Image (cartoon, rainbow, N blue to C red; front, side, top):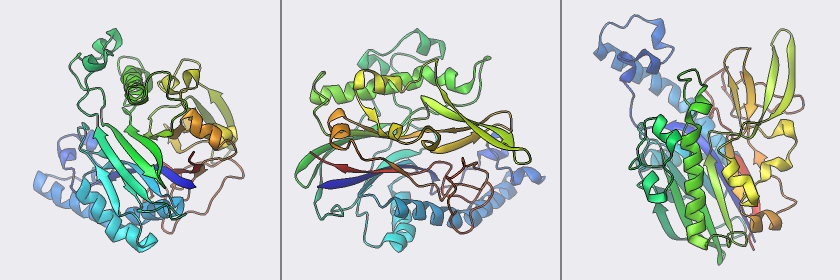
Length: 371
């Protein structure tokens, strides 16, 4: 009996317009920066028109990427609310996959922009086994003090013991798949953000992500018992906004590119998951140049392919699926994404240089035998 599990950051699946760009140019779309907009009323009209004009293509590609993942359960990040998810599933996904994801779950989290983690599930696996949710729990209200995770590094960032750990949430679900227990932990860790005080954005926000990963591990160990998690069926899914390795992309369109794998030597928040074999990143079973789920660039001087999107497997699941390898759906990537040789894919219709696109992220999907 198998389960097909996926994760995907769908990027700003919203039901509202963001008008903050009129006063904060850092939040203003680059198209509107080309125009001299004299008052906020006109800005709001233009912003609404821009979003509406671009959204249909974008969401068609998002739906195509989810359809290509063909998962029984898919974990999503950056969903505005249940209304947004319902409208997207019915208006786009239903047209792609038909009678598919009737079970949808979302609990409002802590993100200041209102983007949440969510889960969509079929009623049965492709093998005809029932998917039954027994319990769902949000951990959005857990504080650093609750888990004893407050430290000097967090204090230096201006945080306090009573602050919430998760900048979005850790959504905990306990299911039975064809009668077999399976637990799922869905997260979207703190984003890297811009550089601050002479430190790059990733390093500046690392203490927050480390606290989040420690909290996820604590939640799982509280559920199954510390030292007793290895034999359980569980997975941690989501956008981790961190990596343990990456691929440097060196060159330009004119000169051509070369690709050099790098390993993180200064530590990653994800070490909390991988240390002592607590969970396994099954993506490591792919070639080092072929594990990436996102292309990042700050001009030709910094171009990287890295894995931000993960399905972490418990030791029991990793052993039971030792020969299985995750799939990555990259057809929704914009044309600016630089693919290593042999990895090129056919993009979806109307994909642009930077947009429209399915997302900057790629869906990760894996078929798992449950034991």
